[in-house]
Image (cartoon, rainbow, N blue to C red; front, side, top):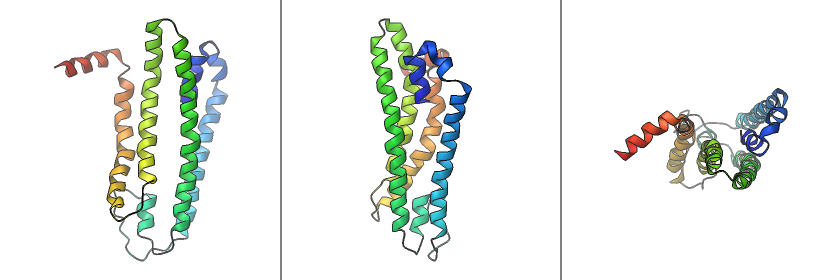
Length: 190
């Protein structure tokens, strides 16, 4: 979506030529392949673990850190993989999104019409807010310090990571709707 916004704002006349079905399919396929590869890495490494402490996971859902917590085998390799693979995802994807938004902001500042500038910013703000919320809460959930008290903090972070972005996405994206914006302003002013 960041590339889509970049092309739509920086190259509006060439948008349909650049963002054709083939490019969209390539982006979707790449996302699926990366997601499958990421899942397979963790699944394969989980199969080598043995579990003898408990069969109950002290968490809201089956996630990597709570699963590692109940393992009685060495989890150092799994933890390294979580940090390396997760770190690569964050260090590659998030900067690419930030770079696209730097180009977008640069283009927005070149727009002389204030109304057009505001409309352009509102197009991108919702996406940037959603992505930032997702990456920041996800990073706090997975790249936490390992201490006895940190696991309860992880549960809270994981709750934010899994519930907050999907919960707020409809609200964030619907704020671009003029009618909803008027209602929202009316409620706030009361």
